[in-house]
Image 1: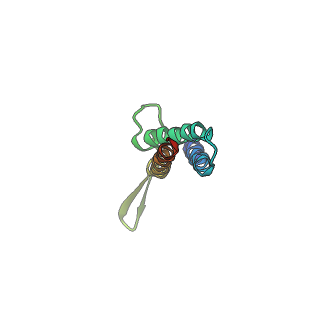
Image 2: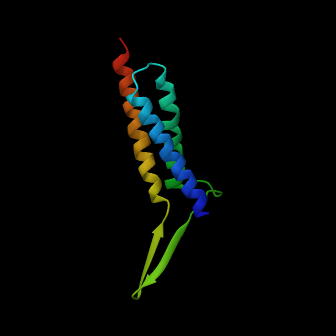
Image 3: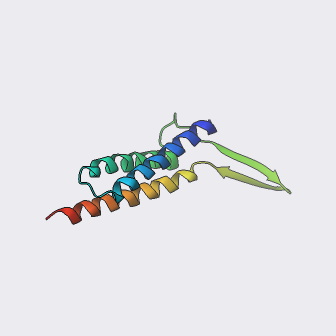
Length: 101
């Protein structure tokens, strides 16, 4: 299950990277090529952090160290692609508005 989450997380980071590349390009048709990966990263981030579906794996790890119990939840790494996807989405919209006459 952790391998699936790692693959999905890497895919969302890849989507963020593609959206950032599209943002830095100056060609007008690149707008939709950037919006789609940014939206995919946002959706994956929301699903990863919130986990609204029962079929979405929720993986956590807990261990005991020196008499204290520690738990690690693997949903929070999805917050980084979520934030980067939102920022890139907003940057793309801002750039699109700058181009309009």
